[in-house]
Amino acid sequence: MIEVQRGEGPIVLGLPHTGTDLPDEIAARLNERGLAIADTDWHIHRLYDGLLDGVTTVRTPIHRYAIDVNRGPDGSSLYPGQNTTGLCPVTDFDGNPIYRKGEEPDPDEIERRRERYHAPYHDALSAELQRVKDIHGVAILYDCHSIRSWIPYLFDGKLPDLNIGTNTGQSCDPLVENSVDKICGTTQGYTSVLNGRFKGGWTTRHYGRPFEDFHAIQMELAQSTYMTESAPWTYLPEKAGPTRSVLSEILQSLQTLALSGDLT
Image (cartoon, rainbow, N blue to C red; front, side):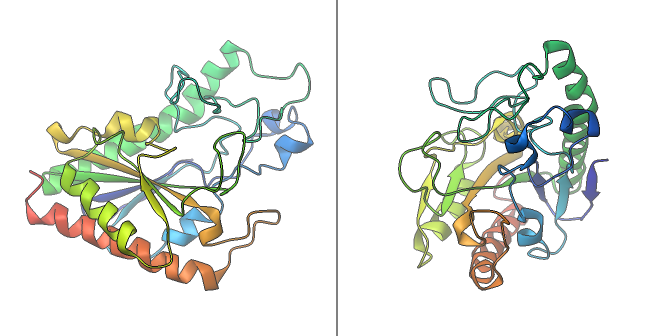
């Protein structure tokens, strides 16, 4: 079920939200809005495909409406006091219900989903990070995300194009953070922010242990940088091309840094 493409380099790409599969027993309980799966990180696996030789990718095909693998298994909020969605979301990013009335998952079902879909993803991700660290002495998790650039329920105004999250510098060495931030901040035609609205999800915070040579960084892209932001969510090669160039430069810089020995 979990899709793993192994490479021999020090970088692992996490792809937690590109999946669109909904198990039948879950889909049957969703309302029309839920079945539209609008909150997908559309085309992200395509956007990153082929950008870095030797990279490892870990992807779940299961949609985040079944369970969000970028949330902690205990369901605690990543952003206390702010609107967000939970481990098994019951609303979409606009705050609207996604289940038919009375069909929301109860605690027992949430636990079953955690065991069936959440745990296997993290088992695979953890194993691949350990594998590349055993090869290189260091591993960098680059967690790949995207979201609509205008979502008033979640944030004010228009989201910057490139949103870097390092859990306020705790999930990686400053060299990793600075490398990505410098590229994003100096690339013409793109806006960027470091640890703004998105500081890194549970994945970044959980695996980012720079004192153990595991570094993690999240990139949340505004979907306007590579696609249309409404159904049918069309991939736009003319926009995606320049964005892929920026992302390629970022990944190349991280691989060079990891192989330099400066992180160990």
